[in-house]
Structures are given as structure tokens and as C-alpha cells.
Length: 95
Image (cartoon, rainbow, N blue to C red; front, side):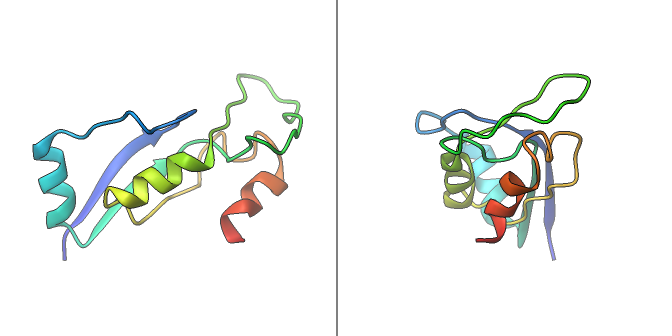
């Protein structure tokens, strides 16, 4: 079994992203490709950020779609920004 782990991913739109051929080959050769989905999906919900120290970030649903299309299939959510917009934005993942 081959598992690749990738670092933080945050995007406000991803239609123009291109992957290098070597990275594409690496993704195809693995059983699992995990990428840290660093921020909650908030776009369009008009939800205010939680009060906290440090920046609050969010991203669009298109980022997850793009990642899945390119072979990413595990999305760890345990990070310091996942609750930046509260539980409702995290729950989008489970709909």
C-alpha cells in the first residue's frame, strides 16, 4: 500500500491550477493521497468568522472538487483553522 501525505491546501478558486507531470505520476501511483484541507468551506454562506487571535481563513468548494479530480482522496481536517467559521462550515463536509 502506498500513501502520500501533502501539506496545507487553501484556495479561493482552482480552475487554473496545473500539476507537474511528475506529481501527477506520483498521485496515480498511490493508493491514498492525503492533503491537509487547511481551511473550512465558507464561501456563499455569509457566516462571520469566530473571534480568535490570528487570521481566519476560508476557501471555496471548488478546491475540494479540484483535489478529488486530481487524485487526492484523504482530507485531514485537524488543523488550527478548521473552526475559523464555526461548526456549521465544518459540517459542510458531511452533507
